[in-house]
Length: 493
Image 1: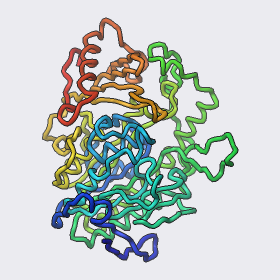
Image 2 (image 1 turned 30 degrees about the vertical axis):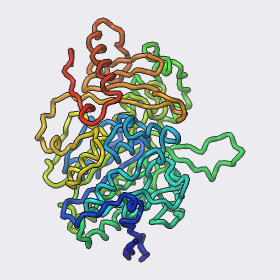
Image 3 (image 1 turned 180 degrees about the vertical axis):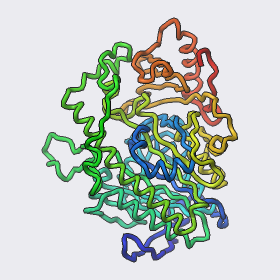
Image 4 (image 1 turned 120 degrees about the vertical axis):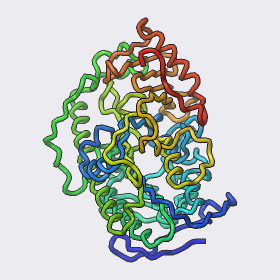
């Protein structure tokens, strides 16, 4: 069964498909609850955005942060695209939801049980659900026309996902290739159109707009098949944004191209020094990333404007975040996945009804907490044992902000086929413990060493701390539910 609504998309009247119960849900045998009057929820997600990128987004700071709650220690425990997104959809860490990489067989879209995810819970709870943009890696690889369970409106990227000016989407079961349009602008426009559409609905809505910005770009069509060169390059800025930050001065800290790696595990010691030419390229990539994010910053303003114009703003929670961060030369590493601060720290801002304005919370939270938070907002029951917890009490100030949370860190081998983990670890407000698959151990006291330059693992002064954190890692590496929520009160904490 499908319902066709006529909505103004991209300036033209087209038929917009809202796929309801039959879309991947019939096999569940679930009945949709009566319409609810709960608040709307919108998730705005960027891709590979670092925490320190947020300072260059004035609309996001003024319209969301100044009117909501900023979580300054938001963590992505498995800092890689697909595992991070699967944590948002399930409220579970990767060792519980099974998605431990970007590609099959360790991870990817087909590793996730999509019949039991956040959109399914919300849809069955009476919410209209909508997705736009990049979903889980490898989505559409087996069936380009597939629509994941739980989504009423679907506009997911299926081909040339990382091409900023040419992308193919599955729009409610119909494939559409969009050329000569900047991807962020495309999904920005469709998101605001949906806000207009939902203004006439008698049901609240959940919308997740997932931008690729500022992820690196891949323009495969410009690389010959027999070429040894890769398609990857810095993200291009939208029209009018190119060059707007070319004079920005970014001072590299000592962790960029770190000189002495002898304190780190063998995996890190094997990384070569970055050449001067490549260092310049990484600096320019940082500028390109900031310029590309200006389009997302405008999208935030457009969304808030449309919510206010349609009378839905006061009844809508807005959640701004990223799937993971990325290292741009810190500790000689030039991508994500590792357990260092630049990879695991991402922005999180939540604004909405009943939340204080302009407040910053210092307690560590994770992307696995978002499913619990959204379910709490919508008053729907999750059907998984959640490792995360609702952030509403913390956001409102009902929970003390000084407790030191222990967060498990984990990432699998990059080849997606090897068994086991690349590393596992734990992070507290002060310490980071990383244990590599060969047993090499790194321990950082970030209060005294925020750049994570000198590992204190194996030193007498930190023997008690290391012993306690290793015990916590043993307890958390296979934790589930409430077992995953530990607080740290060890020596030197």
